Image 1 (cartoon, protein in one colour):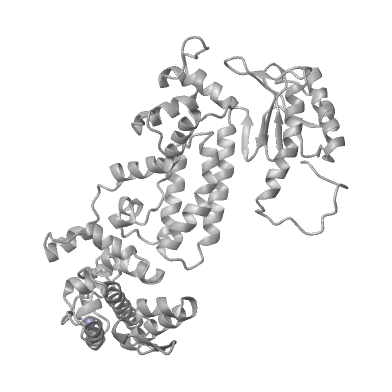
Image 2 (image 1 turned 30 degrees about the vertical axis):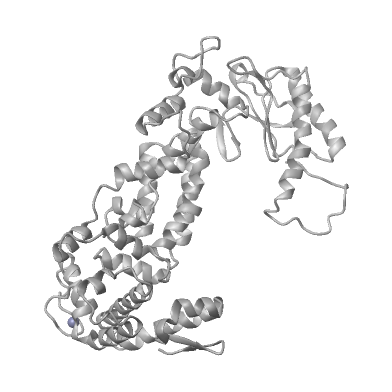
Length: 509
Ligand SMILES: [Zn+2]
C-alpha cells in the first residue's frame, strides 16, 4: 500500500525476515498515525468509555475510521502531506472504503477510492456485513485444506505429520479464531481432514483421544481444534490485564466487564454481550479460568487435553497388561518410544508396534476375510504381532545375533525376554539406550522381511542383512555430523558396534 522511492539507493535486497526492517517501517508509519489522531477535522468513532478511535495500524495496513464527511477528505490530505515527507504514496487501487451505519446505503465514491457497502477484508479477515464470519471461515478453510492436500503425497512419519499440522496447517486458523469463533460443524469438518491426513485415508487404528494425548500417554500430540481455538481466546482475557492500552479493551470492559468483575458502575456497561463475548464467557466457565492466575493459552490447552482427552486408556495398554500382568509402567514405556535416540522412522515403527497396530495377518484377516491369517514366511496358521516380530523361525538367527551384541555391550544381558523385545523394557543403566536401539532395529528388520515376503515375493529381504545395513548406515551418518568424542560415548560402548583408535572411527558391525 505504501512505497518508498528516491531516498536512498537500495544496493542489496532486504532479506525476508530481517528483524530491523519492520521496526524501521513502524517508526515511520507511526508519524502518519499521530498526524491522523491529532487532526481535529477528522472525527473518529467514540468507543464505550468515551475514547475516540480514528486509526488502527498493522504494518503497512492502515485502517481509518471516520464519521464525518469532511474527515474523509482530510484523511487523504494528511496522507499526502505525510507522503511528501516520507516518500510514501497511496496505492488507490488497493485502498478501499466501507460504508457503515447511517452511511450504509451511500453509492458515491469520494476521494477516488473504491467503496463497498457489504464487507471489506482487513489483514485476512472480513469485516462489515452479517455473513463476514462465514466469508472469513470459507477462505481460511479452503487454505487449510489446500495445504493438507499439498503435503498428502509426501511420505511423512506420524510425528512429521504432526509437525506439518501444527506449524503449517492449523496455524492458518488461529488469527481468525480470535475474531470469529469456529462453528461446531466447521471444527468437525476440519478435524476430520486432519485425521484423514494422519492416517493417509486408511482406517484409524489408534483411538483419536490417544493420538491427541501427550507422548508420555502414548499419544502424538495431534491438535484438538476445538480445545485449541477456545484456549487461544483465554489468552485475550489475560492480555486485557496487561498494561498497554488498546481500543478493544474498552469494548471488552463494556460488554463483559461486569461479569469479569473488572468494571465499576462509573463506566458504561452493556446488559447483553455480543455473540463473541457470550462465547468468551462460556469458554472461561468451561475451562474454569481463574482470572487472578495468569496462565498461557498453551497451559490451558494442555490441561484441558489431560483432563478431558487423556483419561481414555489406550487399547494396547490393556492388551499388554493382560499378557504381562499389571506391573508395566506405561508413562515410562511411552516416553521411551518417543525418545530421540532412535531415528524418526524407527520411532514411528515403535509407536505402531507398541500400539499393536501393525497390519499383521491376524488383524487384517478380521477385516478382509479373503486375506489369509497365516504367516507368509513360515506358514504358521495365525500370524500375530508377537509371531512376526520375534517368534517366527525366520527371525531366529537375527535375534541370536542381536542377543550376542547386547551381551557384549552389557554382560548382564544373558537372554532377551518378551518384555525386552516387545516393549523395550530394560533397567535404567547407561547401556539402556543402545540396547533399546538394537531391539527396535531388530523388530523393524523383522517387519521389513515380513512385508517383503507378503507383497514382493521376487525381492525378499533377509532381516539379518537388513539389520546390519540399517545400523551401519546410522553409524556412518552420525560419524559425519557429530564429533569423535560424542560419537565414541554414544556408540562405542565396549567397542561392539564401532570403535575409535587414534582418532579414527571404525564401524565393526
Ligand atoms: Zn512365521
